[in-house]
Amino acid sequence: MKGMIFVELMNFMDESFGADFTERVIEQADLPNEAAFTTVGNYPSEHAGALVEAASLLADADAAGLCEAFGRYLFQRFEVRFPHLLHRYASARELLDHVQSHIHEEVKVIYPGATPPSVTTHECEGGYIVAYRSHRAFAHIAFGLVQQCIVFYSEHSRVEWCPDSVSDHARFIIRPGTDSDAI
Image 1 (cartoon, helix red, strand yellow):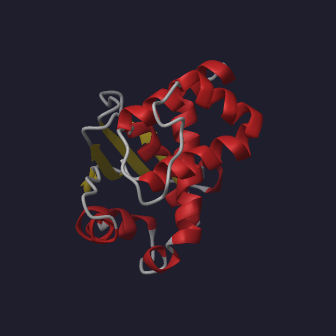
Image 2 (cartoon, one colour; image 1 turned 120 degrees about the vertical axis):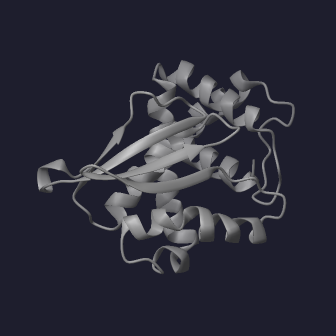
């Protein structure tokens, strides 16, 4: 996994729970690099799993919920780091339609050797589906990213986790809604 994700995960924990909490997570995760990450480095995805597991235990929180919150946070960081990419699209659907063919291709140029997940979209009754597939078990992060994407484009939609979804391949249904349905 790219170091940028690890750096943002550490920032997320610092901002959400405080620096002392993050230090306890690092100690609990017992990583060989002691969580010394750089944005340009590559690290095993298992390191992220260990950090999330430790944070979940220390915060007495659901790991999936923490991953979703991190996904929302990460999209907000993308707003700051990559505004040119996000403003290229007029809607969440347009952006999500181009994750695979455009955004992840740019990721591979910026970060050679990156292996981003597969993210595809297609129509369904009453909305559209975003499908996530990866060798990494971080579908809940993707779910949070999609939720925050909807917020970024000020769309009034519901994002639903499909019941047959699991952590390495998942589907999310996005249905148009009213103001009360907005995330």
